[in-house]
Amino acid sequence: MAQEKRDYYEVLGIQKGASEDEIKKAYKKLARKYHPDMNPGDKEAEEKFKEVNEANEVLSDPDKKARYDQFGFAGVDPNYGAGAGAGGFGGGFDFGDLGDIFGSFFGGGFGGGQARRNGPQRGESIRMSVSVSFTEAAFGCEKNVTLDRNEQCPTCKGNGCAKGTTPEVCPDCHGSGQVQVRRQTPMGMFATTTQCPKCGGKGKIIHQPCPDCHGQGQVRKRKTIKVTIPAGIDHGQTISLRGQGHAGKNGGPSGDLLITVMVQPHEIFRREGTAVFCEAPITFTQAVLGAELEIPTIDGKVKYTIPEGTQTGTVFRLRGKGIPVLNGHGRGDQYITVNIETPKGLNKEQKEALRKFSETLGESNYEKQKSFFRKFKK
Image (cartoon, rainbow, N blue to C red; front, side, top):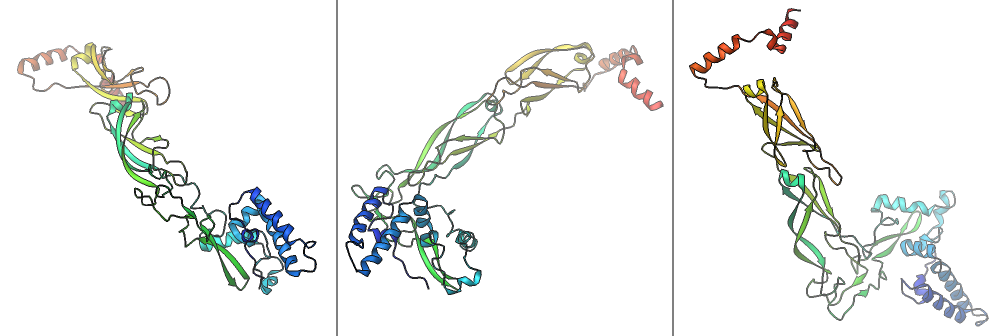
């Protein structure tokens, strides 16, 4: 069984988190007090002198001090806690691997990866969606969104204490939010780190809670925020507003506000990237003779001349009439597919006129039909 040691901070008579100067002053004072030259033949003073030197050796070294604060004696002394059976493992036991072992069984409580609850914590992000029209997404707009979020309590400035009071550093964990629990195992005495039960892992104890936030340091508030929707944004894309989420804890930064844009479908236009598509019906006469059409675009109507002999399904392109490039320059194009609308409800005279007109046409007037039957004959 390993000899029980006193906590190094207790040995030097200082609090955990003491500065380098405080550690140095405490060591010099005790080293003079228990120095063998000042206490000749005093075995107890000699042991205390060794104890003070050991504590100073660890706490004055930033790396050793960090390991000791996290793992206790096991972090700075590989032989600490090793019982008589430790040699049965072939000599030394690698305590550097102990974090991995306990991490598997206790969720990383022994290892250094566990976040300290009393340290600065970033606030949670808030996710929500906003609906915009097709043209609002194309050209950008501003929308007001209302949300409920946690904000720092203005009364206590986030420390959770009533006015004129301050939180007490937890005497059990010295503000770390964690304590060591030693357990005897077949391999010897092992120390594991767990949440301090006295302060609930917060590292501090509030005796007089703030009346507005009840000691939480945060209050719930409803806010309306103006959001700028950039031109060219597409359905399902997300806008991130830095620092507009829930407030952080212990001085940590606020989270973000993540807004997903939902673009409503348009009655005429369809979008693919920066390209806009639409279909335009034309008459038989316009297709045969050609015509100047009024074509709808997201900018309004424009005039476009189609050539004579236009076939149904023909696609025309309007350059620069599409969607603006998101966070860039330029715009996409618009594509118009024309479809010939067959007239219905003809009267007797119209039908007769159409038959006479058809009789004047020959095979040369119908290139697709001629090509089709030529392929059929082959």
